[in-house]
Amino acid sequence: SKSYRLSSAPGRENFRTRDQLLVSGELNGELIHIIVAHWPSRSGGESRSRPLRIAAADLGRHIIDSIQKVSPDAKIIYMGDLNDNPDNISITEHMRAVPEVKNIKKDELYNPFYSLYKKGIGSLAWRDTWSLFDMHLLSKSLTGDDFSTYKLYKASVFNKPFLQQQSGRFKGYPLRTFAGGQFLGGYSDHFPTYVILVRDMKQI
Image (cartoon, rainbow, N blue to C red; front, side, top):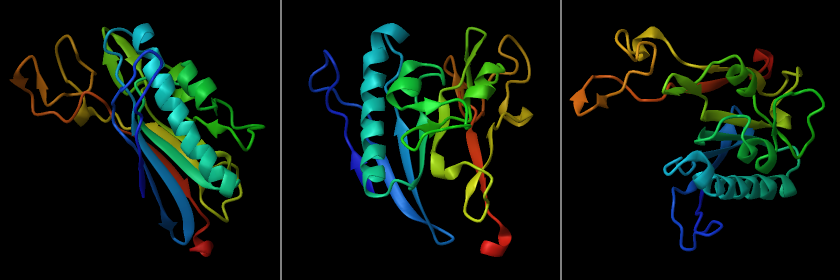
């Protein structure tokens, strides 16, 4: 494991935010690299805070490039609350995460959550608008239909009813633990997201 710190951003010297954590290990004998990140928030407005998330994306891309320089076919999952949507430039341009798996290049990532977002599915809501900040971005080696090694099978937002507000103005929103100083007994203001990787059982 290794922790990477983002210490500066355009116009923000000595900037501090959450580290990005790289963990590498074996999943049934296959080497997998997982990078967990929580990018800077949209506090102060999306546009004003955008450079901070772009800086976080550039750091994430640097980590991925470093891995792929040594192992071009490395299996990498970049995941976390990125505080941006799948179509924001931090994701599409700086992380080089594409919405279509067809013809994906080795130095690109596949974002399986893009299509969900375009269907109106989100992991959090604000003023009746859904966003999908919580994503998993996958390297090309985790895509395709050769399941002799682990490949992506499915990506989803886990938004079961027990995680949702059941009544009132915010019906259908994630059920928070606290809201307005009141204990609601919920889980989070975000729904969890996940990916399923599958492999031919004969290979295990």
